[in-house]
Image 1 (tube, one colour):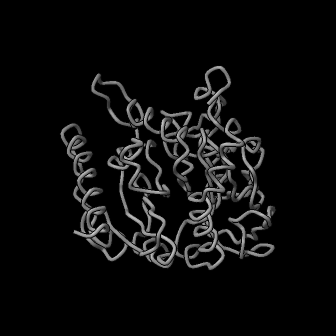
Image 2 (tube, rainbow, N blue to C red):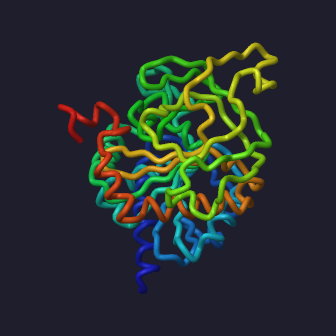
Length: 330
């Protein structure tokens, strides 16, 4: 068995173990038919032939699987990617299991669905204490890169406040949001917005090949960010004010103006781990945009690099959740 086959077998085995534990506790819907990722192979989908090993994480928000898989395949000379859905994905937060990958690429939004807990009370999905402990250990180790795309900023914001600080913001379009101890109304989302994205850090490796900026038509958000904990890379000319989200505004929805609402991409640190977030990326219109493809490719390559990890170590306290820094250390 060659190394590629052995790696795929190992991923499949871990996913099966995680899924088996979950299935014993929670009834699961039937698998969604259709392509699951690169080539449409069974198990955790594999795609690409590049040297950087990427775990592509989804669940919690619908999306065009075929379209996004096609974009990831277009990066195939740089990356090899494996598609793992929640809840199995959190198994790979364990630093031992994470050794299969170089970068985690998130296009997920779990934790926004209210469930009935075993004690009969109502609450939101929670990844559980083991996943939380493992992710903290993994990020403090600083051996992996993390890239969050578009709606991944909505993950776990009701049950895992440290996670939202890791990403640098929190969204939920159906429920009120708490971010860094402050309450906000449910978030704004507006699709098909024509906007110009300006590169504000032309020296950063992620923005190389983009020039001064690019035009894109894509979904944009209004939700709280933490601009004081990030290094901005991109800004949009769309004004993220509640009145500019007409469908919600007409129904009486209101949202306060937030700092950094024009941010469209940033890098930051959590623990000793380099992190990149790109706000764009809702559908094929964005995924087929050459500038967006370049940004995703660059983000993966940068977070995987020794340079990014050294930068993260030198900026370790910036953006790291306070609860992960007892005594002011990581």
